[in-house]
Length: 127
Image 1 (cartoon, rainbow, N blue to C red):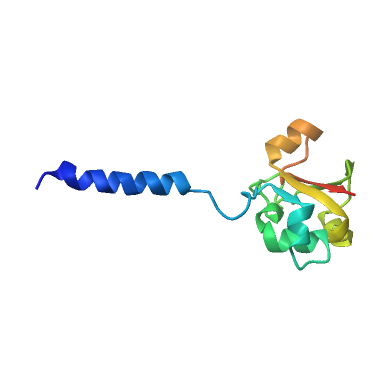
Image 2 (cartoon, rainbow, N blue to C red):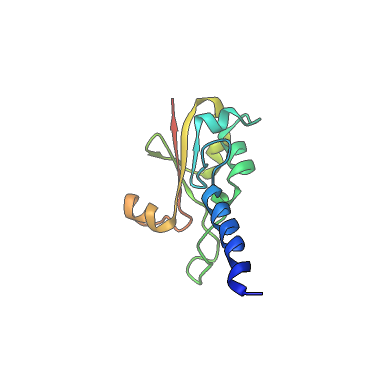
């Protein structure tokens, strides 16, 4: 039997699968953003709960410990454009007032806000 005869149905199946890839029942969700609509679907009370349950990777440091900085750096929190003292402030923000949360990588955060963003940044916009 000719191998081309077997490859044609296989190629057709693969192309059909590729064409439907990513077509779900809803919009594709970003791993970098949490919107008010997404948060409304969650069973959470604070912004921290939402991040902890649905975007846990935001809370993990991207910076490797060094001699001058032995501790892993958490992301810096910005609430409505204002730098907050600590990432734990996320626990004081009610989930129902959050319009959007976005994670910036360390390089993006440094480009936008300057140095000392080794863990990136979490930007929270409230209503």
